[in-house]
Length: 540
Ligand SMILES: [Zn+2]
Image (tube, rainbow, N blue to C red; front, side, top):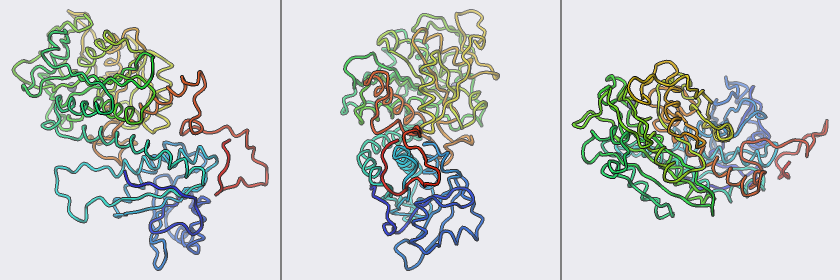
């Protein structure tokens, strides 16, 4: 990550590139007003003449000569009072893209002071996350000319003293979380002739130095253990691309049953003998984004020494047409013992996940399971790139995940998981076939049979994990793999552990969980008296 500093905003402290925020109709925030005064009203004068309206995501740039400030980027936020943490994250991505386009080396963000210090801190960290994620690059296979080299090095956040101190304290943890999103994105962006199942096992082993215990189950052990669905999908790949189930154990809490995170890791999906049509096959290297998200989350938790026990499972295989194929109409005995009739070899994700889920429950009895998978095109049809589908047998689990999604911007929308959607079977206990109508729920119902009584949530991230297929989503600034899931899961698990540590009330680490609003009652607004800005203020 770039170097990060935080300091109190003063009328003279801004230099070089400065970012200020404006609301709709070009209304400047108090911090922007301070910069405006320091530049003899240039921002106001410029906004009066242009088309700029200060809408969310809108940007305009003002260049200055003979001034300590060389350029001002005015970032529109729409309505400041309604800004959630995820909106600041989104704004950060737009700003980060602009830094990259302009070749900015160092910038100051004039954030100032929002209604509470908690809100200010949440906004600042979300902006940093957004900027870092927008600056991520995946260019190891192409020539990068001198003028295209990454330039951004240093970010200064100008805010109140208290928030500045909080940001400086949080910086190392934030950097670890963001490095973990990079890990996920790079693993997902790598082509299938580089990133095969064994590659994911190697990435997991890199976490051993952080105290993560790694187990890798290869194709021979799968046969012995009866992971027949997993092997059916991955068995037709070349010898060096044979399937791997990678288990990562992280124990950051004393006792407590683990939470299991299980990711679909189809390193490439041809569809198998139900071969995908030619124009649907490109981008299928991203069919392992669930596994990549689990990898990044394990890295974040271990690096940040989270007080949780988690098992990360990556179900990695290549779905190929090969010498040892699994065919439609075949029947396999799953690890759980249920016989599965193959309705469609392209519905392979639920097969590897089914065995991974059943095995994890059998061996480790997790408290709860969350699986992540680029599972269905039907989920993309339903939700596009705005939300991942959330399917769950536990309201408490679903609500906690949805809340973490709202805070981080990796949003989830709950979908039905009724048995009504189950695929029809002919000769076995269950069939993996999908339907074009309600297909995301059909897939979820299939997985539910294997999760059985363990509280479980399934996140269908087909539309949110990458932007390759032109899905218009909240992550479109990011390009390629988005790292969806890492911030969501880390946030959820860390907040849950903070809550259990202090009994029923969430731990007030640095105020409330980021993105939540403080109750206003403690600092009532007095009519006619402006709430102080630009100064540190006590938490509401
Ligand atoms: Zn498939």
